[in-house]
Amino acid sequence: MIDAIFSSDTMKILEKSLNAASLQHQLITNNIANVDTPGFKASEVVFQSKLQEVLDKTQGDYLKLKLTNKNHIPIVPEVTVNNLEPQIVTRTETSLRTDDNNVDIDSEMSKMAENTIYYSTMAELLSLKLGMLKNVITT
Image (cartoon, rainbow, N blue to C red; front, side, top):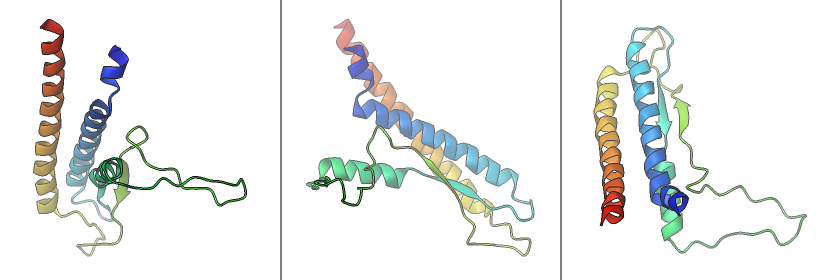
């Protein structure tokens, strides 16, 4: 029973969102630390768009594909909440300076502020969810 409560989709999404935001914060601080390193390329986490895709598919009227014959081309595995993971992407296509460094300090500081708000929101949602569970248990 307890496992079912803590392994619900909501709890998994909150956990994975917090982990992705933490990883994003690490990458942003690394980008800022290397703002003057020649040839350094900034990195970022791709997670929120993948999460939105999963949420859209679970709420939409999508048809699931299935193989009807072993000779058919295999279907690409569908991303679900269980196998949703943040992906680190290095931005190599841009270069802001002659030393091939592409870190924009203003952009990174903005991303850090946005990520801090996102992390705080996810932590607050998790706290509220656990508070509801505590209320049910003690009532």
